Image (cartoon, rainbow, N blue to C red; front, side, top):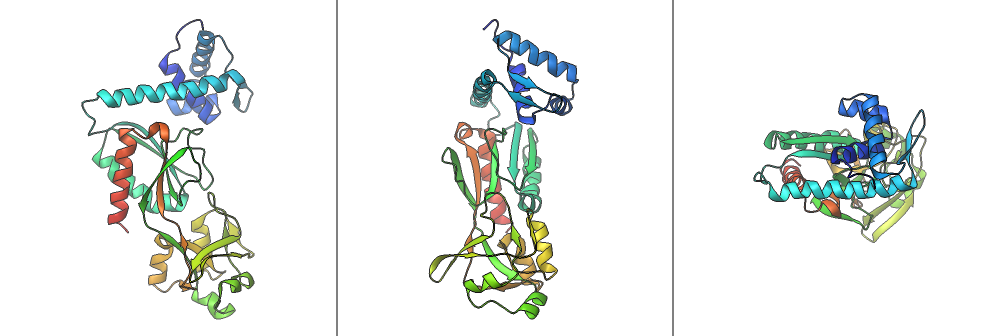
Length: 299
């Protein structure tokens, strides 16, 4: 190694890797493309290795770049935790907090909660991304994932922050036209509106009922990757959906949707998921505790 790398350059390098773009990094940081290219070049010179394969459309890590990226994340996290450990303002956390969650839950529950969190802790810089897909929490540089359903990744920490369940329901018009299923097996003969969301098993519903967990294969002419779209189609009478109580509860209470097979539901509690390397972060801890209290008070 020729020289000690600058922390700012390591941070910029991690941003380039996350966004897979020099231009995107420049826009995010409010600097020029030439500045990003120059700083990456200086970092490569300092380390004596090539970090990135660059094309006109994207960038990718070299083998040496993968090693440097892992160390850079660790170093930057250690520096951040050092700052938190010695800060006299530990009770008023600040800095960047990157959070992801699914689109429907994010808009209707997480975003209002984070609005309240931002008022309480103005030194926090909160970035929320709504993603209806599986997320690599560490690889995509998120501090926190608010997930309906717990983590399956053994290297992540999970904390349940709200009770929730998914229930079956349909519009009165659909049930008048097609009838009401009497057993779970009957769902196979009905039009079901299927969703591909996060880690959900597409087209197979597992519900807990009087005889424990049971599985049924469902299908229908409509499917989507967004829960709000599926909810809207159910209101229009297109079929049966399996959705969280937080989403369909008001529509059921108003008679716009009718619960089907009420003896069955699918456990789907809300979990805060975060990497073990951030488990002692004051800003993550404050955010998780705040969300847990907010969701409890705003059911």
